[in-house]
Amino acid sequence: YRLDRISRSIADFSQLILTFENLNVKFTSATENFDSATPLGRAMINIIMTFAQLERETISGRITDSTYYRGNKGWWIGGRAPFGYKLSKLKDSNGKLQSSLAIEPTEAEIVKLFYAWYLEQDMSINKIVTRAFEQGIKTRNGNAWSIRVIADMLWHPMYTQNTMKIYNHFRDLGAHIINALEEFDGTKSVNLYGRLNKNASHHKRFREVSEQNFIVSHHPPLIPDDEWLKVQAKMTAKKHAPPRTGQSQHSYLSGLLRCGECGYAVSVMSRHENYKIYICSSKKNRGTKFCKSQIIRTHIVDDAVLSQLIEYFHSDKVKEELKKIKQARTISPEILVEKNNLEMKRTKNNFEIQNLVKAIADGNAIVNKYLTEQVQTLDDQNAEIQAQLKKIESLAYAHDQTLDALTLIATFVGDVDRNIKSASFDEMKWLCQTLIKHVYISKDSIAVSFLI
Image (cartoon, rainbow, N blue to C red; front, side, top):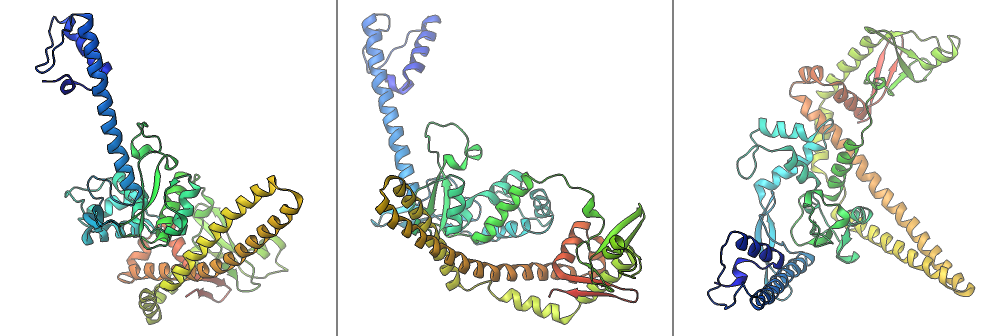
Protein backbone atom coordinates (compact mmCIF):
# COMPACT_ATOMS: atom_id res chain seq x y z
CA TYR A 1 0.00 0.00 0.00
CA ARG A 2 2.81 2.41 0.93
CA LEU A 3 6.55 2.14 1.30
CA ASP A 4 6.47 2.94 5.00
CA ARG A 5 4.04 0.03 5.56
CA ILE A 6 6.72 -2.51 4.67
CA SER A 7 9.64 -0.78 6.44
CA ARG A 8 10.70 2.46 8.15
CA SER A 9 14.42 1.80 8.09
CA ILE A 10 16.55 2.91 5.12
CA ALA A 11 19.15 0.19 5.67
CA ASP A 12 16.51 -2.49 6.10
CA PHE A 13 14.54 -1.49 3.00
CA SER A 14 17.67 -1.14 0.83
CA GLN A 15 18.67 -4.69 1.72
CA LEU A 16 15.11 -5.83 0.96
CA ILE A 17 15.19 -4.22 -2.54
CA LEU A 18 18.51 -5.93 -3.29
CA THR A 19 17.03 -9.26 -2.25
CA PHE A 20 14.01 -8.66 -4.52
CA GLU A 21 16.29 -7.84 -7.47
CA ASN A 22 18.41 -10.96 -6.93
CA LEU A 23 15.24 -13.07 -6.96
CA ASN A 24 13.82 -11.23 -10.00
CA VAL A 25 10.90 -9.89 -7.97
CA LYS A 26 9.38 -6.48 -8.71
CA PHE A 27 8.14 -4.27 -5.87
CA THR A 28 5.16 -1.98 -6.50
CA SER A 29 3.46 0.53 -4.19
CA ALA A 30 -0.29 0.93 -4.75
CA THR A 31 -0.35 4.63 -3.84
CA GLU A 32 3.13 5.84 -4.88
CA ASN A 33 4.43 6.01 -8.45
CA PHE A 34 8.09 5.17 -8.85
CA ASP A 35 10.20 2.78 -10.88
CA SER A 36 12.91 1.04 -8.90
CA ALA A 37 14.65 0.14 -12.15
CA THR A 38 15.63 3.78 -12.89
CA PRO A 39 18.08 6.03 -11.00
CA LEU A 40 15.36 8.67 -10.45
CA GLY A 41 12.97 6.02 -9.11
CA ARG A 42 15.57 4.69 -6.67
CA ALA A 43 16.32 8.25 -5.52
CA MET A 44 12.59 8.81 -4.86
CA ILE A 45 12.46 5.58 -2.86
CA ASN A 46 15.40 6.74 -0.73
CA ILE A 47 13.76 10.15 -0.10
CA ILE A 48 10.45 8.53 0.90
CA MET A 49 12.24 6.06 3.19
CA THR A 50 14.30 8.86 4.78
CA PHE A 51 11.14 10.68 5.86
CA ALA A 52 9.53 7.39 6.94
CA GLN A 53 12.52 6.63 9.18
CA LEU A 54 12.49 10.19 10.54
CA GLU A 55 8.80 9.82 11.44
CA ARG A 56 9.42 6.48 13.13
CA GLU A 57 12.31 7.81 15.21
CA THR A 58 10.34 10.95 16.14
CA ILE A 59 7.33 8.93 17.31
CA SER A 60 9.59 6.53 19.22
CA GLY A 61 11.39 9.43 20.89
CA ARG A 62 8.11 11.07 21.91
CA ILE A 63 6.79 7.85 23.41
CA THR A 64 10.06 7.29 25.32
CA ASP A 65 10.11 10.87 26.59
CA SER A 66 6.46 10.61 27.67
CA THR A 67 7.21 7.35 29.52
CA TYR A 68 10.19 8.85 31.33
CA TYR A 69 8.23 12.00 32.16
CA ARG A 70 5.49 9.95 33.84
CA GLY A 71 8.07 7.72 35.51
CA ASN A 72 10.00 10.68 36.92
CA LYS A 73 6.74 12.02 38.35
CA GLY A 74 6.34 8.78 40.30
CA TRP A 75 3.63 7.13 38.19
CA TRP A 76 3.59 3.53 37.00
CA ILE A 77 5.03 3.47 33.48
CA GLY A 78 3.24 0.36 32.25
CA GLY A 79 3.22 -3.41 32.26
CA ARG A 80 1.78 -5.87 34.74
CA ALA A 81 1.63 -4.90 38.38
CA PRO A 82 4.46 -6.55 40.37
CA PHE A 83 3.57 -9.25 42.90
CA GLY A 84 2.00 -7.66 45.99
CA TYR A 85 0.28 -4.89 44.04
CA LYS A 86 -2.55 -4.31 41.55
CA LEU A 87 -3.01 -1.56 38.96
CA SER A 88 -4.98 1.51 40.02
CA LYS A 89 -5.66 5.08 38.94
CA LEU A 90 -4.81 8.26 40.85
CA LYS A 91 -5.34 11.90 39.95
CA ASP A 92 -2.27 14.05 39.43
CA SER A 93 -1.96 17.75 40.35
CA ASN A 94 -3.84 18.68 37.16
CA GLY A 95 -6.74 16.36 37.91
CA LYS A 96 -5.72 13.89 35.19
CA LEU A 97 -5.89 10.16 35.94
CA GLN A 98 -2.51 8.42 36.00
CA SER A 99 -1.52 4.77 36.38
CA SER A 100 -0.32 3.78 39.83
CA LEU A 101 -0.21 0.74 42.12
CA ALA A 102 -2.39 -0.28 45.05
CA ILE A 103 -1.71 -3.03 47.59
CA GLU A 104 -3.13 -6.46 46.80
CA PRO A 105 -3.68 -7.75 50.38
CA THR A 106 -3.19 -11.50 49.86
CA GLU A 107 -0.07 -11.11 47.73
CA ALA A 108 1.30 -8.37 49.99
CA GLU A 109 1.26 -10.75 52.97
CA ILE A 110 3.30 -13.26 50.95
CA VAL A 111 5.88 -10.58 50.08
CA LYS A 112 6.20 -9.66 53.78
CA LEU A 113 6.45 -13.35 54.68
CA PHE A 114 9.30 -13.94 52.21
CA TYR A 115 11.23 -10.95 53.59
CA ALA A 116 10.73 -12.21 57.16
CA TRP A 117 11.79 -15.73 56.18
CA TYR A 118 14.96 -14.52 54.50
CA LEU A 119 16.06 -12.72 57.67
CA GLU A 120 15.78 -15.92 59.71
CA GLN A 121 19.02 -17.47 60.85
CA ASP A 122 20.66 -19.73 58.24
CA MET A 123 17.92 -19.00 55.67
CA SER A 124 18.56 -18.76 51.93
CA ILE A 125 16.51 -18.03 48.81
CA ASN A 126 16.66 -21.71 47.89
CA LYS A 127 15.18 -22.63 51.28
CA ILE A 128 12.41 -20.04 50.79
CA VAL A 129 11.49 -21.74 47.49
CA THR A 130 11.34 -25.12 49.26
CA ARG A 131 9.32 -23.82 52.21
CA ALA A 132 6.85 -22.00 49.93
CA PHE A 133 6.32 -25.21 47.95
CA GLU A 134 5.78 -27.24 51.14
CA GLN A 135 3.22 -24.72 52.42
CA GLY A 136 1.40 -24.48 49.09
CA ILE A 137 2.28 -20.82 48.48
CA LYS A 138 2.20 -20.17 44.74
CA THR A 139 2.73 -17.33 42.29
CA ARG A 140 -0.06 -15.22 40.84
CA ASN A 141 -0.35 -17.71 37.96
CA GLY A 142 -0.55 -20.71 40.29
CA ASN A 143 3.00 -21.87 39.62
CA ALA A 144 5.79 -22.81 42.01
CA TRP A 145 8.23 -20.05 42.92
CA SER A 146 11.69 -19.91 41.34
CA ILE A 147 14.95 -18.69 42.86
CA ARG A 148 15.28 -15.87 40.32
CA VAL A 149 11.79 -14.46 40.92
CA ILE A 150 12.20 -14.43 44.71
CA ALA A 151 15.70 -12.94 44.40
CA ASP A 152 14.27 -10.11 42.26
CA MET A 153 11.50 -9.56 44.82
CA LEU A 154 13.96 -9.36 47.73
CA TRP A 155 16.25 -7.00 45.83
CA HIS A 156 13.79 -4.57 44.24
CA PRO A 157 13.52 -1.25 46.14
CA MET A 158 9.92 -0.61 45.05
CA TYR A 159 8.70 -2.52 48.12
CA THR A 160 10.30 -0.14 50.64
CA GLN A 161 9.90 3.45 51.88
CA ASN A 162 11.20 6.78 50.61
CA THR A 163 13.28 7.53 53.69
CA MET A 164 16.69 9.14 54.04
CA LYS A 165 18.28 5.76 54.75
CA ILE A 166 17.10 4.52 51.35
CA TYR A 167 18.15 7.80 49.72
CA ASN A 168 21.67 7.51 51.15
CA HIS A 169 21.88 3.82 50.19
CA PHE A 170 21.16 4.52 46.51
CA ARG A 171 23.21 7.71 46.48
CA ASP A 172 26.19 5.62 47.60
CA LEU A 173 25.44 3.14 44.79
CA GLY A 174 25.55 5.99 42.26
CA ALA A 175 21.89 5.93 41.17
CA HIS A 176 20.57 8.91 39.22
CA ILE A 177 18.23 10.40 41.85
CA ILE A 178 15.38 12.40 40.29
CA ASN A 179 13.57 13.80 43.33
CA ALA A 180 14.66 16.55 45.69
CA LEU A 181 16.03 15.64 49.11
CA GLU A 182 12.91 16.96 50.88
CA GLU A 183 10.68 14.40 49.12
CA PHE A 184 12.27 11.49 51.00
CA ASP A 185 9.98 11.82 54.02
CA GLY A 186 9.00 8.14 54.48
CA THR A 187 5.36 8.56 53.38
CA LYS A 188 5.60 6.89 49.95
CA SER A 189 7.67 4.26 48.18
CA VAL A 190 10.55 4.36 45.69
CA ASN A 191 11.36 2.79 42.36
CA LEU A 192 14.36 2.12 40.16
CA TYR A 193 13.64 2.07 36.44
CA GLY A 194 14.77 2.90 32.93
CA ARG A 195 18.28 3.61 31.73
CA LEU A 196 20.32 6.80 31.57
CA ASN A 197 21.61 5.81 28.14
CA LYS A 198 18.36 5.22 26.27
CA ASN A 199 20.22 3.34 23.53
CA ALA A 200 21.70 0.80 25.96
CA SER A 201 20.55 -2.74 25.30
CA HIS A 202 21.21 -4.36 28.68
CA HIS A 203 18.21 -6.09 30.19
CA LYS A 204 17.09 -4.43 33.43
CA ARG A 205 18.20 -7.47 35.44
CA PHE A 206 21.81 -6.90 34.33
CA ARG A 207 21.71 -3.11 34.43
CA GLU A 208 23.84 -1.39 37.06
CA VAL A 209 22.07 0.81 39.62
CA SER A 210 24.20 3.74 38.44
CA GLU A 211 22.68 3.38 34.96
CA GLN A 212 19.08 3.79 36.16
CA ASN A 213 16.72 6.47 37.48
CA PHE A 214 15.81 6.41 41.17
CA ILE A 215 12.48 8.08 42.00
CA VAL A 216 9.90 8.59 44.73
CA SER A 217 6.82 6.62 43.66
CA HIS A 218 3.18 7.21 44.60
CA HIS A 219 2.40 3.61 45.54
CA PRO A 220 2.36 2.56 49.23
CA PRO A 221 5.38 0.59 50.59
CA LEU A 222 5.18 -2.94 52.01
CA ILE A 223 8.56 -3.36 53.73
CA PRO A 224 10.08 -0.97 56.34
CA ASP A 225 13.38 0.59 55.27
CA ASP A 226 15.39 -1.08 58.06
CA GLU A 227 14.10 -4.54 57.11
CA TRP A 228 14.77 -3.96 53.40
CA LEU A 229 18.33 -2.80 54.10
CA LYS A 230 18.96 -5.84 56.34
CA VAL A 231 17.90 -8.08 53.45
CA GLN A 232 20.29 -6.24 51.07
CA ALA A 233 23.11 -6.57 53.57
CA LYS A 234 22.52 -10.31 53.91
CA MET A 235 22.32 -10.82 50.14
CA THR A 236 25.57 -8.88 49.67
CA ALA A 237 27.28 -10.76 52.49
CA LYS A 238 26.33 -14.12 50.97
CA LYS A 239 27.94 -13.07 47.67
CA HIS A 240 31.23 -12.27 49.40
CA ALA A 241 31.15 -14.79 52.26
CA PRO A 242 34.59 -16.34 52.87
CA PRO A 243 34.99 -20.10 53.17
CA ARG A 244 34.00 -21.37 56.59
CA THR A 245 36.69 -22.75 58.83
CA GLY A 246 36.30 -25.64 61.22
CA GLN A 247 37.39 -23.67 64.30
CA SER A 248 33.91 -22.34 65.12
CA GLN A 249 32.48 -25.85 64.98
CA HIS A 250 34.01 -26.98 68.28
CA SER A 251 31.25 -25.66 70.52
CA TYR A 252 28.08 -23.60 70.15
CA LEU A 253 28.84 -22.16 73.61
CA SER A 254 32.09 -20.52 72.44
CA GLY A 255 32.56 -17.10 74.00
CA LEU A 256 29.87 -17.69 76.65
CA LEU A 257 31.73 -19.97 79.03
CA ARG A 258 33.31 -18.61 82.23
CA CYS A 259 35.27 -20.35 84.94
CA GLY A 260 33.29 -20.52 88.19
CA GLU A 261 36.54 -20.46 90.21
CA CYS A 262 38.44 -17.47 88.78
CA GLY A 263 36.04 -15.86 86.29
CA TYR A 264 38.31 -16.27 83.26
CA ALA A 265 37.00 -17.46 79.90
CA VAL A 266 36.77 -21.19 79.27
CA SER A 267 38.03 -22.64 76.00
CA VAL A 268 37.43 -25.95 74.28
CA MET A 269 40.18 -28.42 73.47
CA SER A 270 40.05 -31.53 71.33
CA ARG A 271 42.09 -34.49 72.58
CA HIS A 272 40.90 -36.54 69.59
CA GLU A 273 37.84 -36.64 67.35
CA ASN A 274 35.40 -37.97 69.96
CA TYR A 275 36.96 -36.49 73.09
CA LYS A 276 36.60 -32.74 73.70
CA ILE A 277 37.04 -30.89 76.97
CA TYR A 278 36.40 -27.46 78.49
CA ILE A 279 39.35 -25.93 80.32
CA CYS A 280 39.83 -22.59 82.09
CA SER A 281 42.03 -20.28 79.96
CA SER A 282 43.88 -19.06 83.04
CA LYS A 283 44.74 -22.62 84.11
CA LYS A 284 45.66 -23.56 80.54
CA ASN A 285 47.98 -20.58 79.94
CA ARG A 286 49.32 -19.79 83.43
CA GLY A 287 49.25 -23.05 85.36
CA THR A 288 47.31 -24.65 88.23
CA LYS A 289 48.59 -22.19 90.87
CA PHE A 290 46.39 -19.48 89.29
CA CYS A 291 43.26 -21.64 89.00
CA LYS A 292 42.43 -25.01 90.50
CA SER A 293 39.29 -25.67 88.40
CA GLN A 294 38.76 -29.13 86.93
CA ILE A 295 38.72 -30.14 83.28
CA ILE A 296 35.18 -31.11 82.20
CA ARG A 297 34.01 -33.12 79.21
CA THR A 298 32.10 -30.92 76.76
CA HIS A 299 29.03 -33.16 76.52
CA ILE A 300 28.44 -32.87 80.29
CA VAL A 301 28.28 -29.07 80.11
CA ASP A 302 26.33 -29.03 76.83
CA ASP A 303 23.68 -31.42 78.18
CA ALA A 304 23.28 -29.35 81.35
CA VAL A 305 22.89 -26.12 79.36
CA LEU A 306 20.33 -27.75 77.05
CA SER A 307 18.31 -28.92 80.05
CA GLN A 308 18.24 -25.41 81.45
CA LEU A 309 17.28 -24.02 78.03
CA ILE A 310 14.35 -26.41 77.79
CA GLU A 311 13.21 -25.45 81.28
CA TYR A 312 13.62 -21.80 80.35
CA PHE A 313 11.47 -22.24 77.25
CA HIS A 314 8.56 -23.48 79.34
CA SER A 315 8.66 -20.62 81.83
CA ASP A 316 5.67 -18.29 82.05
CA LYS A 317 8.05 -15.34 82.14
CA VAL A 318 9.28 -16.00 78.60
CA LYS A 319 5.77 -16.50 77.23
CA GLU A 320 4.62 -13.27 78.86
CA GLU A 321 7.64 -11.34 77.56
CA LEU A 322 7.06 -12.61 74.03
CA LYS A 323 3.42 -11.55 74.13
CA LYS A 324 4.31 -8.13 75.56
CA ILE A 325 7.12 -7.31 73.12
CA LYS A 326 5.22 -8.47 70.05
CA GLN A 327 2.46 -5.99 70.89
CA ALA A 328 4.91 -3.13 71.36
CA ARG A 329 6.26 -0.98 68.54
CA THR A 330 10.02 -0.67 68.17
CA ILE A 331 9.76 3.13 68.28
CA SER A 332 6.80 5.47 67.96
CA PRO A 333 5.78 6.95 64.57
CA GLU A 334 6.73 10.41 65.85
CA ILE A 335 10.28 9.27 66.60
CA LEU A 336 10.51 7.60 63.18
CA VAL A 337 9.63 10.95 61.56
CA GLU A 338 12.16 12.72 63.80
CA LYS A 339 14.80 10.16 62.85
CA ASN A 340 14.19 10.67 59.14
CA ASN A 341 14.30 14.47 59.56
CA LEU A 342 17.62 14.21 61.40
CA GLU A 343 19.08 12.09 58.60
CA MET A 344 17.77 14.58 56.02
CA LYS A 345 19.35 17.49 57.94
CA ARG A 346 22.67 15.63 58.15
CA THR A 347 22.66 14.95 54.39
CA LYS A 348 21.89 18.62 53.66
CA ASN A 349 24.75 19.67 55.93
CA ASN A 350 27.12 17.33 54.10
CA PHE A 351 26.13 18.82 50.74
CA GLU A 352 26.64 22.34 52.11
CA ILE A 353 30.03 21.40 53.58
CA GLN A 354 31.12 20.05 50.16
CA ASN A 355 30.10 23.32 48.48
CA LEU A 356 31.86 25.40 51.14
CA VAL A 357 35.06 23.38 50.77
CA LYS A 358 35.00 24.08 47.01
CA ALA A 359 34.42 27.78 47.73
CA ILE A 360 37.36 27.85 50.17
CA ALA A 361 39.63 26.53 47.45
CA ASP A 362 38.69 29.48 45.21
CA GLY A 363 38.40 32.27 47.86
CA ASN A 364 40.79 34.72 49.45
CA ALA A 365 42.10 34.56 53.01
CA ILE A 366 39.38 36.75 54.55
CA VAL A 367 36.54 34.89 52.81
CA ASN A 368 38.10 31.56 53.74
CA LYS A 369 38.08 32.51 57.42
CA TYR A 370 34.28 32.90 57.47
CA LEU A 371 33.69 29.88 55.23
CA THR A 372 35.81 27.74 57.54
CA GLU A 373 33.74 28.87 60.50
CA GLN A 374 30.56 27.83 58.64
CA VAL A 375 32.06 24.42 57.92
CA GLN A 376 32.93 23.99 61.60
CA THR A 377 29.37 24.95 62.63
CA LEU A 378 27.85 22.45 60.21
CA ASP A 379 30.26 19.75 61.36
CA ASP A 380 29.29 20.41 64.99
CA GLN A 381 25.61 20.11 64.02
CA ASN A 382 26.33 16.77 62.33
CA ALA A 383 28.07 15.49 65.46
CA GLU A 384 25.01 16.38 67.53
CA ILE A 385 22.67 14.79 64.96
CA GLN A 386 24.81 11.62 64.98
CA ALA A 387 24.53 11.40 68.77
CA GLN A 388 20.72 11.68 68.59
CA LEU A 389 20.50 9.09 65.83
CA LYS A 390 22.76 6.71 67.73
CA LYS A 391 20.48 6.94 70.75
CA ILE A 392 17.35 6.18 68.67
CA GLU A 393 19.04 3.31 66.80
CA SER A 394 20.38 1.71 69.99
CA LEU A 395 16.84 1.54 71.38
CA ALA A 396 15.54 0.01 68.15
CA TYR A 397 18.44 -2.49 67.99
CA ALA A 398 17.91 -3.65 71.56
CA HIS A 399 14.21 -4.20 70.88
CA ASP A 400 14.89 -6.09 67.63
CA GLN A 401 17.44 -8.39 69.26
CA THR A 402 15.01 -9.25 72.07
CA LEU A 403 12.15 -9.82 69.65
CA ASP A 404 14.29 -12.06 67.41
CA ALA A 405 15.25 -14.18 70.39
CA LEU A 406 11.73 -14.50 71.73
CA THR A 407 10.31 -15.24 68.28
CA LEU A 408 12.80 -18.07 67.93
CA ILE A 409 11.76 -19.36 71.36
CA ALA A 410 8.14 -19.36 70.20
CA THR A 411 9.01 -21.68 67.31
CA PHE A 412 10.61 -24.15 69.75
CA VAL A 413 7.89 -24.19 72.39
CA GLY A 414 5.61 -26.60 70.50
CA ASP A 415 7.97 -29.55 70.85
CA VAL A 416 11.04 -28.39 72.72
CA ASP A 417 12.89 -31.69 73.07
CA ARG A 418 12.56 -32.66 69.43
CA ASN A 419 13.28 -29.20 68.04
CA ILE A 420 16.42 -28.58 70.08
CA LYS A 421 17.82 -32.05 69.45
CA SER A 422 17.17 -31.77 65.71
CA ALA A 423 18.52 -28.21 65.39
CA SER A 424 21.67 -27.67 63.35
CA PHE A 425 24.94 -26.52 64.90
CA ASP A 426 24.47 -22.99 63.50
CA GLU A 427 20.90 -22.76 64.82
CA MET A 428 22.00 -23.83 68.30
CA LYS A 429 24.96 -21.46 68.25
CA TRP A 430 22.78 -18.49 67.27
CA LEU A 431 20.17 -19.46 69.86
CA CYS A 432 22.72 -19.67 72.67
CA GLN A 433 24.54 -16.49 71.62
CA THR A 434 21.22 -14.61 71.54
CA LEU A 435 19.72 -15.88 74.80
CA ILE A 436 22.67 -16.58 77.10
CA LYS A 437 24.88 -14.01 78.77
CA HIS A 438 27.32 -16.41 80.45
CA VAL A 439 27.64 -20.06 81.49
CA TYR A 440 29.63 -20.43 84.72
CA ILE A 441 31.36 -23.80 85.15
CA SER A 442 32.62 -24.98 88.50
CA LYS A 443 33.28 -28.31 90.19
CA ASP A 444 29.80 -28.62 91.65
CA SER A 445 27.56 -26.59 89.33
CA ILE A 446 26.86 -25.34 85.83
CA ALA A 447 24.91 -22.05 86.07
CA VAL A 448 23.38 -20.34 83.05
CA SER A 449 22.85 -16.56 83.12
CA PHE A 450 20.19 -15.51 80.58
CA LEU A 451 20.03 -12.17 78.81
CA ILE A 452 16.22 -11.94 78.95
